[in-house]
Image 1 (cartoon, one colour):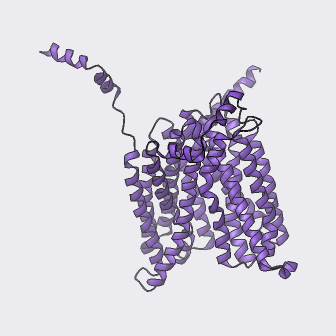
Image 2 (image 1 turned 90 degrees about the vertical axis):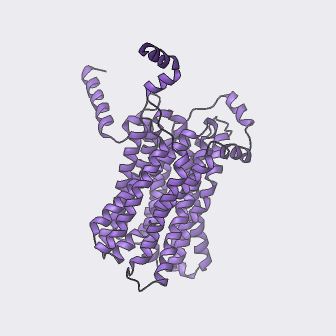
Image 3 (image 1 turned 90 degrees about the horizontal axis):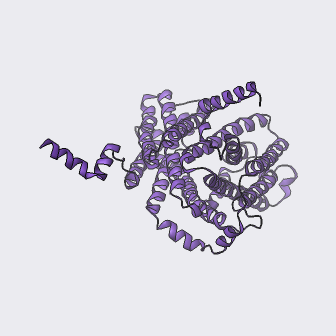
Length: 482
């Protein structure tokens, strides 16, 4: 390489480390290009999540005239597979592949299952809507096909994300894992944001044919991204390693060993409580802005961007601090502490009729959730034994996804119940929303209580450690004084 090329290369590397988020997560064994390529599986997961929860939610109800109750059931179906993430992670820990791989076969299986769901989904939706010649088909065919499609997509997403994060844990050095976690979830958020804009642009002139093209295009892009992500990422195990895997214990034995580990159950409880606290408002923020603050559809749509931006800032700050050796659960507790005034700001936005206060509270909710999610996931990765990384991350993902799904459903139900019981209170339509937001504050306090024993105490100063290790120094000093 000539001197000019060397200078350009050094300048580009310095620019990336300085300005690109999480660029310094790279190591000589895991360069930035390989790390970014691995994170593409999170982009495909983000695409599917936006398609299920965002785009199809509106298209099915408005354009295809599918009853909202059926839509709600369909969207919740992928959560059925959330508890199986621990089993999926365990299987990828002990898998015996002829080629010597553990993670890659499960990544490809998850990708193909996800592709299968996306491939049959558009036709299932058309039959479910009863449009055209599909009106002559029995209703149960459309319902069964749509349910199957959503189940397949959910199973593929959970498998891909669990095993992909386990592979990232295998490849990353312990000191760089906090920044690797931040990079992975930054790519997830970026994938969701980009996918939302792309889907919106492609479906601006809606037609059933265009819907089929968009979903099938997403299926093809999913396969391409995941294939690029795992290409030459995992090394092939030796024959000795394969023989060791043959003596692996059962899932029950591995789970018992893991759950009896240092504060394992308390960690999972804290993850569940905090996730519920930061998820219960997901389906209520936009209706709250429209019904209580009388914001337009365009203004309330910006709330998703505010949450994402807050989450990006949270991940960025957490990665920078945790990479310097900070305690992950202390960082997670800071996230819970940020969430308390954030929800209070959202509550106070109603009596003050302040859209600015509402937007600031939403931004800080995303920021607190970013700190909490990064802290708990980093703690899980650090505490995972080398041979149980998949099981540990699967358990974290199972609790996190299940708690989020339960919280979202519970938030909507509680809002409706309170609104029906107290329709003429002083708070008016805000009563149901305020009850849910207040409950989330209570859950955040419960999360803090659950995490207190998990927070690592600050290490004493180096001078004090040396004095404690060598008490004779203190005795000599006292002797000299006397």
